[in-house]
Length: 236
Ligand SMILES: Nc1ncnc2c1ncn2[C@@H]1O[C@H](COP(=O)(O)OP(=O)(O)OP(=O)(O)O)[C@@H](O)[C@H]1O
Ligand SMILES: Nc1ccn([C@@H]2O[C@H](COP(=O)(O)O)[C@@H](O)[C@H]2O)c(=O)n1
Ligand SMILES: [Mg+2]
Image 1: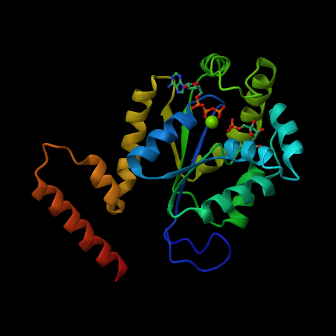
Image 2: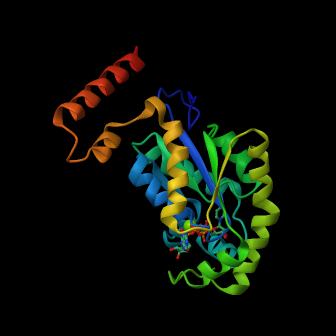
């Protein structure tokens, strides 16, 4: 995918975006950390960006905090600007955007402001009873991890987020995994999805990660030389 730009200006960076959605507590943050480690993506959690904004002394801080306490969604222009800023400040060209788009307004604002079509949407599917159990035992001091707010977050997820999943489903862009399994098993399924899109996009970092002591130095050298040729060919 040749992205035109993130900020309206032409760019020759090939930017890849994967949206990561699932119910509250489905393991988005947990799985994103594993994807970063194995596939070299940069991870932005929309919720974490908003939490950081409330602590930054921003003019919107109190308003964001109040909405989050209620499990409500923040205005799209705010969250999209935060995501765009984070992407522009990154050196990477592959991004996991976790907890976004949460509603149609988020989706349309991203399309208008950032103007990048996602590669696909990774959907972590998990029953509500399991989500509730996980959130109530998360113990990370989140103000919204209480039963009253959890119920409101589930409602927002069903009413506002699932329609976005359907939108991408109709376009063949949803990769759904069963997230009601132990984290390592969930990641096995995710690995298969990301490996299949990796194609020519294998990175130097990936070779370094995959290299094992039993691999001969000449095999690793050969892989790196192949990758150099591939990159030169891509630049032509
Ligand atoms: N597959 C899993 N099985 C059991 N527990 C899990 C699994 N994945 C994550 N957890 C645990 O569930 C809790 C929620 O996980 P995580 O924070 O990754 O979810 P999330 O989707 O990012 O949640 P939120 O939408 O609230 O940000 C954490 O305590 C995490 O350790
Ligand atoms: N696109 C988004 C994402 C999140 N929020 C708010 O943040 C809360 C926490 O989000 P997590 O992904 O960390 O669970 C969420 O309940 C919303 O209040 C948002 O407004 N827009
Ligand atoms: Mg999270």
